[in-house]
Amino acid sequence: MSEKLNQELRTTNILWNLTDLYSNTTDPAIAADLDSCTQEAETIDQQYSGKVARLSAEQLLDLVTRLERLETLAGKLSTFAYLNFATQTKEQTAGAFLQKIKEVLSRISTRTVFFELEWNKLEEEKAAELLADGLLAHYQHYLASLRRYTKHLLSQAEEALLLEKAPVGRSSWMNLFDKVLGHMTFGEKGRSEEEVLADLYNMNREVRKQAAADLSAGLAGNLHILTHIFNTLLADKMIDDRLRCYQEWISSMNLYNELEDQTVRVLVEAVISRYDIPQRYYRIKRQLMGLDELMDYDRYSPLPLLSATMPDSAADDQQTTSAAPAIPWDKCRSIVLDAFADFAPQMAEIASQFFERRWIHAPLLDGKRGGAFAHPCVPEVHPYIMVNYTGNIRDVSTVAHELGHGIHQYLAADKGYYNSGTTLVLAETASVFAELLVFHNQLELLTDKNERRAFICQKLESIFATVFRQISMNQFEDRVHNERRVKGELSSELISEHWRATQTAMFGDTVTLSQDYGIWWSYIPHFLSTPGYVYSYAFGELLVMALYHRYQQDKAQFIPRYLDLLKAGGSDSPYRLLAPFGIDLNDQAFWQGGLEMIDDMLKLVE
Image (tube, rainbow, N blue to C red; front, side, top):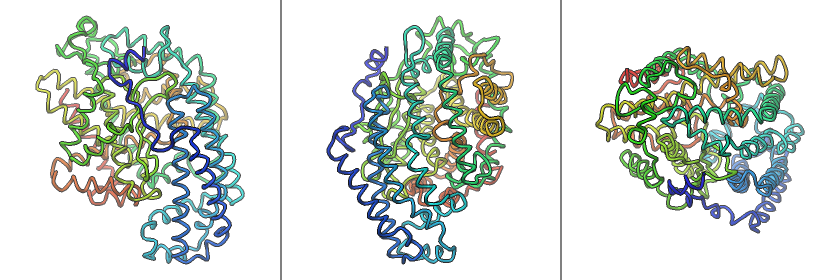
């Protein structure tokens, strides 16, 4: 089934070329680079361990430069191993190779862990003196931001031990999760996760209902494994937070994002205060679809285009004329590149390279992990993008989203390995802004009232998924992390109760959640790989609303400022990087302004 769809969409040969990293898993360069990393880590350890407090600015610059080169080479190795695995999770050799690279790099890291520990133990006066030296200007933010972890680091022996055991910790459980999902098939036709999820966007209600049932049945058959993985990683974070003295389960994520706890609280409270927006929308959608009850599997159904009041059953009959046709890959490419070019030709030029130089992996394949991502790789190479393209308008937005990440990573590469990596909240800003460019570009092409309304509704649903759903998932995480710390291991039934409760808070009485829907928490990888990640999407979406408003007011000044923001990568804090735009992240009114813009879009439908 996947092969046929790939052929129809012309994605069969849209495969990334990993030879820019290594030719294959037996490439002699891999062993050579591993040896080089090992030897350099040992040399750095011998030369500098126990001496950081006595280094001059010039000596510190030499050490940090060498560490950056070492971590860049290690990053190249780990990127290749993961990307190789991501498209063939069923292949034991790919999994074994990934594990081998993780284990070797973990051992290497134990030789250099001394630097962060000794740098953080440095007296404040001495550290400030070094940071003020012009020789270290390039690494000023990197070195200063390392010190925010001072209170949360353990002894060198303990940190080395944790690094040694890391390959069989969280990342190993994530590999298991990817393998379990990669081996799953759904329904009588034995389809993949991505194929089933795509059917939730089908015009035909019976197709949507069957897709939901197939997904639920597949997850239920593996729920004991998924629940165990979930509980294990909840406990892993609990122990890590306790050892590192984090006050709340979300504190480490806020620190990683270089955000004050207050900023995140203001964001979350603002979004929850406007749950009325999705509730108003879903009441309208139920009426437009002519349904007595809007079920969870109806949320993403396209609205009928032929009539403002066409019932869902009529849409089923007319889907050959009212349902949006599948969008082939070439058309997707032109939609995205045209939108980028209209904003800034440089964005389109960079994005074109992803298509032309085979930096994208698009088809559905047996064993390929679900979802989509952009991997920054290392500055000396280039980012890679993975999508599972099924040809609907949502997938076009996904391609734009990941290319937004890719462009950001590409532009920031000049800052080097340590300064190019961005906090999650600013990373999501770049991707969501790219989506919004495509949306407005396409909207301008539509003149029919019903088509415009349906298209705005589709975008609203995407925004809801990015803002309100992500904050409801943040609230779910808050419940399960805190309850795991009080009650111990959680049953799948209890986890599902928390999932339904936090989803119901968002939907109110506008969407009926089936009993099966209660286990849909179990296939979401962010809960496992990056606890606390999800609020970054809401942050990015609402920030983009504000940025786009500024773009509309003064395009000439905004565009170079925006590109400078992307080029800056992670070379400063979000607060300082956003200062040129006049944004106060701790101002409740700022977040409410973004929510009002969503409300205004809803009023167009109302």
